[in-house]
Length: 236
Image 1 (tube, rainbow, N blue to C red):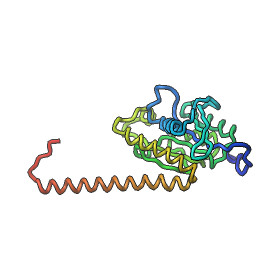
Image 2: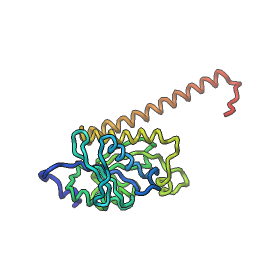
Image 3: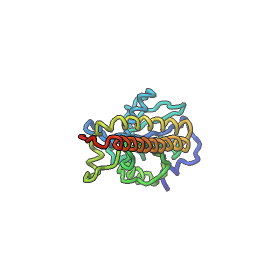
Image 4: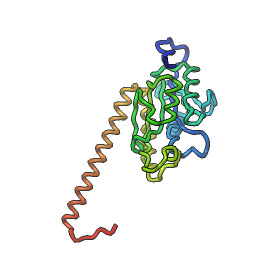
């Protein structure tokens, strides 16, 4: 039996919390790395809704406030990524958080930079933070917001890639992606997980199709230009 099962169908006692967890590594040397995207999304939520995430409890920095009329607990585990589940388990157990009010935000190498996906369950996909949460919670059925950081280049070690800083060219897309993750949290709180997933995931698919359409149009224009000017030499 997973930890969430202990809190199913229980009568609420006092204020109900939605627990929003962002994954990352503590320490200045990791602040700007790809693996800390989850921390950055929590920071954006904290700034937007004036929530101070500065109380140290259950091996994490936490802060409580209100987002879209719902009481939330923002969480940044300080155990280092591979042991994130230890902090998460303690927090879920302490606050008696049921599955439907629990969300994890993290980086994903299977998605393009800035792309966002919302899921209700799934495997760890090679992400050690999610792997540890699944192990500690005894289930892979929990809400998650995945923010794409781009696929690992050929020849790179995965750990080296996720602990590296972003290429400056990728930063605008990552800012957009993290802002979209914030919107995903807001939608989950105001509309529910299914509606949030439908809106955020559909937008991502539409954006991809639009990009493919723009690239095809650009290629066609270049082809037409070359046909009209066959003697011009491309010196780029």
